[in-house]
Amino acid sequence: MSKTPITVARGDGIGPEIMDATLKILDAAGAELDIEEIEIGKAVYERGIPNGIEPSAWESLERTKVFLKAPITTPQGGGFKSLNVTIRKQCSLYANVRPCVAYAPFVKTNFPDMDLVIVRENEEDLYGGIEYRQSQDVMASLKLISRPGCERIIRYAFEYARANGRKKVTCMSKDNIMKIADGLFHKVFDEIAAEYTDIENEHMIIDIGTAKVAAHPEMFDVIVTLNLYGDIISDVAAEVTGSVGLGGSSNIGENFAMFEAVHGSAPDIAGKGIANPSGLLLGAIQMLVHIGQGEVAAKIHNAWLKTIEDGIHTGDIYREETSKQKVGTDEFCAAVLERLGQVPSSFTPADYSKAPAGGIKLPPLKTIEPDEKKRVGVDIGLNWDGNADDLAGLMHDCLQPDQNLKLQMISNRGTKVWPNGNPGTFCADNWRLRFLAEDETQEIRTSQVLALMGNMNEAGFNFTKSVMLHSFNGKPGYTVAQGE
Ligand code: NAI
Image (tube, helix red, strand yellow):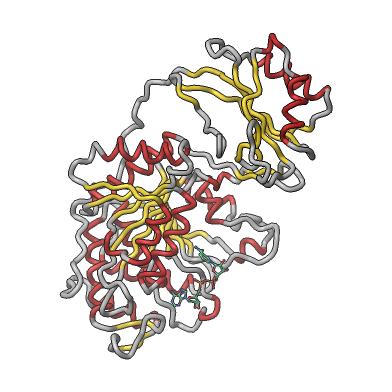
């Protein structure tokens, strides 16, 4: 087997200790790796590099496209950028994959049968960082969801399930509320799920889904969800396993992948030789599967499971009633090395033989016939310190007959306040006015909207944020306001 080039960073705190143990095990198990080392983290930040990674280190990452990363210490104070977010964005790592497994009865947990994987969309949603302060009182964050983004993550979840012998994929969204954005995620899930007849599928609303993960995690196999929900639910799930320190995670892109432990650099125990290397080792096992060395991955995973089963535990998971021997990092590493070639007897042995050689490769995106798009109106945001009826009255002076626009509705914080608003509705200082075509057969021209805005400007109105409204194949591409 030819060697696969990978980039390794030892990180900060316990990083160098756990990376050392991990690399020893990879080497002894016969992983075919050509390792390039780079420096990231605290020392780099302190040299004045605001994102914690030198340009020369980028060259290595661009060459190898596989990154095994130990945790780093993020410096306190402003001016520093998260290295993880930088790498995730620059390398377009669209999938975050986090297995959350209970190791009962050897590691204490309330849910001995828990064995699930969270596949979290990693690039879109509210994480675009597009936020506005629209007025004195009103702030807005923009949630962006794309069809290709949904398709990629959902297909990845199904391919992952297939490659890892998993039986079911559960989609979680909040499409009962966010009908357009989350609605797309659910719709694409149904489309893709239909292609995988060998894998069960189901959809849950994220709130009840999260509650079920906390109370009955054994119900789940693979969960695929949007970025923010995935962020929250993966921490809930990791906590529920009873052993956050045992979590490994991967971040997958089309041409790049990063593998790490879920935990941080644990500065409180750095240099003491007591850190548990398991999280990083499990991350490294995912890496081996990803680069097509599934046999070596299984060999290491089984030796590790056997070590846990034999009760050889580092301090973080050591309990008198469930453990046999309390060990430090080096002794734990030695115990895993001794067991290479053995399989666990209580746990199900790891088997990556179904994993595709060279990792999961997604087919090209589906070709979608474009919908017929028609401009049908505009939502105009205003600062205004009055009431809705007065505002509506003033609008009639700004509308001209040849503009083909009528005032359809005024909302405040998403609730309709005109026409026939409820006088008890609390109104902040930012209002949304919806203008739709008077003659619905005619498309609205931009010049008509500009003319309206020109009149409103003349009348002294203070604009905040405006959005053109479109229909797609005759269906509105916008939601109605609460109460409309
Ligand atoms: P942490 O995960 O480093 O530590 C939390 C607690 O768990 C500590 O008591 C620690 O001793 C223990 N712990 C963590 N990993 C362990 C292991 N492998 N073996 C035994 N005990 C372990 O979280 P904390 O303290 O909030 O963050 C420390 C630093 O790590 C911060 O600078 C934070 O920004 C950074 N961090 C980095 C991450 C990364 O590079 N991916 C992820 C999370 C935090």
